[in-house]
Image (cartoon, rainbow, N blue to C red; front, top):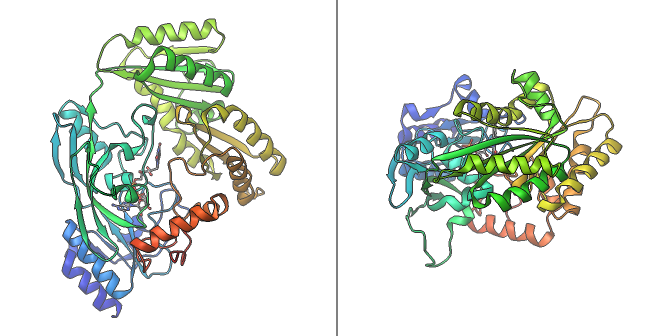
Length: 466
Ligand SMILES: Cc1cc2nc3c(=O)[nH]c(=O)nc-3n(C[C@H](O)[C@H](O)[C@H](O)COP(=O)(O)OP(=O)(O)OC[C@H]3O[C@@H](n4cnc5c(N)ncnc54)[C@H](O)[C@@H]3O)c2cc1C
């Protein structure tokens, strides 16, 4: 089938409004958020319904055209970007943006894949319920992408990753079959829990078209503290203390390095509200019950007495809470404005974080002298964004390998939450065992034998054969 006939078959499914073929109109879909992977799609297809998605997948399969699913295109690993062959289509879920139901008693929300995460959170909040998945890109990321990356964010410590919030999904398989698993059940042991395969699979196994997510009661009280600490060891000791004293109310515990705060001061125009230090902790506790502020103040007083905290502030108002969080939320954008960086989204066992940070810093300075670090992340989850600011003379590949080799030695993961996409395909091959990689290829091969869905993402191109 030639391109004209193929595009016309797509147009007959999604209509004129659902098909973009002009380069200027496709530009925003053709490159990833970090602008590392510029691509050249044959077309951008924007279905309105699950049945249209299924029909598009069938048409692509018949024409031998591969598909790159895309939701909000905020992914950090280039997973949603097409290649530059001009032979792939981007399948954008952005027009599938209906919130179907919010059930405040059953604590569920059912949404289409293109609903923006912040919009889903707002719909839950309007019924007095809470969708805990939270991160800086929530105003653009969409539920389909959030599930496909198994996004983490700032509330994992208390609520878990996105996976723990997914009760059911609807998915279009690589052959165009539509499978409806939109159950709202908390308990369901009837057969294999197949939805887990699609969660976090970055569009390589199927296309998620809708989901039922678990909600929680809306916390009505929150207290946020920003604390300067001497070292990651002190931050870890503070986490231990917070877990003992505040327990399950502790919802976020973020570690932020002094240079990260320097970046947001320089590039986002924000001001650090306490004395400058080498490390900071931003922590939040939330509850439906009152009394948290007193608990946070007592925690902080104890931390000063134990010499764990150098300086600190507990937010006095909603506005101050927003200011404290904006320090954390602006790090990624500020880093992007500061120049070139090599990003690492790593996790190691929690108690190994201080040793890892020290060893990685020393190893990098030895291998690539002069690099600067921008380290921040979800300390409570053992997850750091261990980003390295580099100039033209630095070998980005060497930086990457130096950090990941150390991660492997610590029994960690080279992708705690951002995924593999195309950015980390080679590093996944280097750092996982032959047996694990063979198992991944078998899964890909079983669900997408022709490698029509997002080829070259997660696994290398041509790597689907078991
Ligand atoms: C400023 C900033 C901060 C961030 N902070 C965090 C953070 O704290 N934690 C975190 O985990 N991530 C974070 N991210 C990364 C990103 O926002 C998340 O990965 C998000 O979940 C991606 O959602 P999206 O809708 O943009 O997906 P996309 O970027 O559109 O897609 C991501 C991947 O999922 C696939 N995909 C998309 N939609 C579907 C679908 N419907 N079916 C099947 N596959 C699909 C794509 O092919 C791609 O591989 C951040 C990003 C930015 C820009």
